[in-house]
Length: 144
Image (cartoon, rainbow, N blue to C red; front, side, top):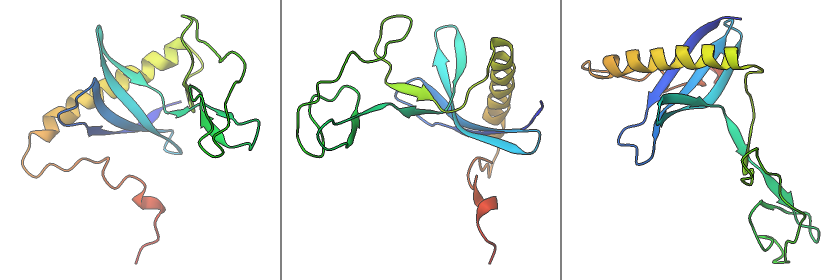
């Protein structure tokens, strides 16, 4: 599989460690959006797109955040079982939507995104710069 396109949206003045949002196209046929490039202690790393995990109220069935004590819909007390934990014992609040199956492909994706991020930083200094990430998804809209 080949990564045929990488688009980067640099985050200006990020208060946290978020450096950029990214999208990758694989084999000019499949797009993965909302990857994040995060500044870590040993350098940037890629966080895969994820969704917030929820639990359902036993009373009304409404979805609520994992750590909620009361239902946002009916106000009933949420007293579920023990939440899922990761290998370090922390409560899992998010789950990846898409991710590589093995470490070597994750490294391949990360190297490609970091290289494109560094090139985007250079392009961003040019007059009239416009991120190619802007307008992502416009190809799905009907032309007028």
